[in-house]
Length: 335
Image 1 (tube, helix red, strand yellow):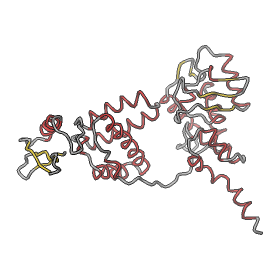
Image 2 (cartoon, one colour; image 1 turned 90 degrees about the vertical axis):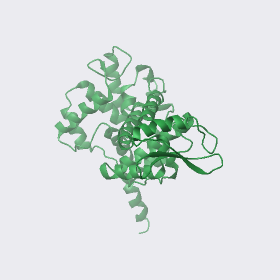
Image 3 (cartoon, rainbow, N blue to C red; image 1 turned 180 degrees about the horizontal axis):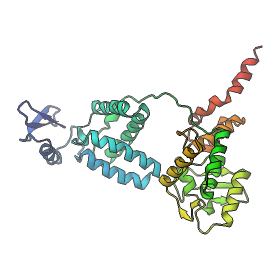
Image 4 (cartoon, helix red, strand yellow; image 1 turned 30 degrees about the vertical axis):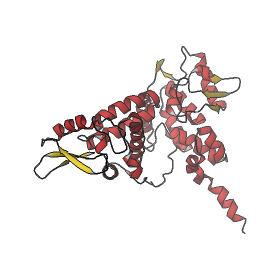
């Protein structure tokens, strides 16, 4: 079912009857907004050829409902990426119903995002839209996901950006906040994600066993699985110092107040700038640094994958290039 403007400017609704034949009905208006209202009323009384009713709704209205759902079930960062995606998606399809969107429309949107942003952003948007439209089917807004007929985007692999030891020491030298210094040192020694650090509570720490337990109680991890993280002496020293001065349940605070991701990201960016190192380095780069340094020290990709909490070891293979010595030693055996 879709709207189409006739040569005389009048919008018509085209749909298939129960016998499979395409037919149309006039909305008797030249205004797209009025035609959409007519379509909603008409569609509410009409069944599609497969017998399943749908609830016609605009892209903007649907996105509001989906984002409300996402906020309840997804992590902060996942929900944040959905918000970004639908900010652009809504602008591109502001006058459409989701039932009007076809594979060709999705392809046009993908091309637009590649040209105005990047192939990486376009790929992320396509993944997000496909997931949202799957939810739309469950909720009765769609009978079929138009994204299923859109080819997946293959993006060129990017090397992870991480701190060299020299740059990391420069960074530590300009951080004038003990709270930021603590979370920075702890992050590079544990590989935890930003939100996992911000939400970390003392009940998740075992000083006796020297481990952290990410139990999905205070924060749902990205993989949604319980994860145990061993701590080295540097990480333990940070926690030992903070525990003696703690006044609440949260491990990492700023001036005794809970930190937000935005605050920590902006604060950290100012220190990167002050240290006069690569401006593309950020807080998440500490996680890449943790993995990269481990691989450079000879730790296996499998072990690094477990420490990072990757669901698939293929995700960790991005760090494999740092093991070039292994490959060099392998070919030397031919001599």
